Image (tube, rainbow, N blue to C red):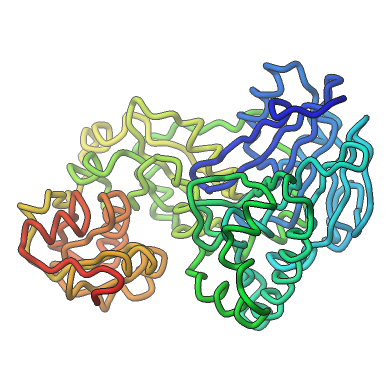
Length: 456
């Protein structure tokens, strides 16, 4: 078949900052690239076009989500395509550099592109001898390259040097070749990048600052300087993906729990996660509950802050989609979902159980400090309140005892700050205030200096 742009459908996961792709092969079949275990959007897209997924390709062993390849093989008979070097323990077609897969007119050619991971492959889409585009996964991304520290500090520089060679290889493709990355803006697998999620080889040769590095040493230094922290669950999922995620045979459900059942689970070491908006959590919540408001980033923070081997109880609002909680958890390998408190906080209070409140105020009503900023260091450097203490949310539990009493806890808007306050309260802090707003709001209200990169 001839290829047209409408044959390729990107599926963007805003929470993870990633893109999967569905390629309509023109004969009722489709290729899926880097699909996650949450296949709802993919199945909806395929269903609208009358497609069956015949091939499920993974560019690498993902760290930030469980692959959907095993599920696609089970549900639709898809052939899993992946690197032979990944030693996956489930049925797949093992591929090495230069191998080709016939898609029925179009072809996929594999390009070994180690760096983000050891076994990373890019998939070059060919129509005859013409390169249409390349699925670059976690190698070449828009104006950057994906991180190289996921296999440990002792491998980081070695993999960064491999990433340099991989980017150079990809940059040797024709200018008009489309670049279809998986990682992008918002992904903790990526160094910072812009809003665009696809590009071309020619545009990257022109605009990617890493490709402009004059030599390998400079490239390595610049790439490593961009790396920040990443969620704790990343260290577990690579091996889960190598073994292959368990097949989900029916839509997972959330068990309805009574107050007494919730209390029993808490006493047995379970965690309560309150997914209501920050303002609702502030007005009243179960003591010890962790606030992670339901939004696109919910899965990331669940996997960063909570263990995957303890029962999890959820408190939600009446209008919140319980199915979204389940799939965001399952997508990152969290399956010990004990259930949801039926009736929510009203039921908890009706049973005579105590609740706790947390001050959540706008900048004009907030105390003057001390100011705790829980954003990522890159965000903090780009604009912060003078004299603020910065502890990233992901590291806060480890240093909770060092946080000054009575702190104003802040992020960019308030969601992460409420999560931080809930962690500090679990550690024994009282008298915290969560800022409903960001550093610019606080600085304006309190006459504080707003420090930005370049005037520090």
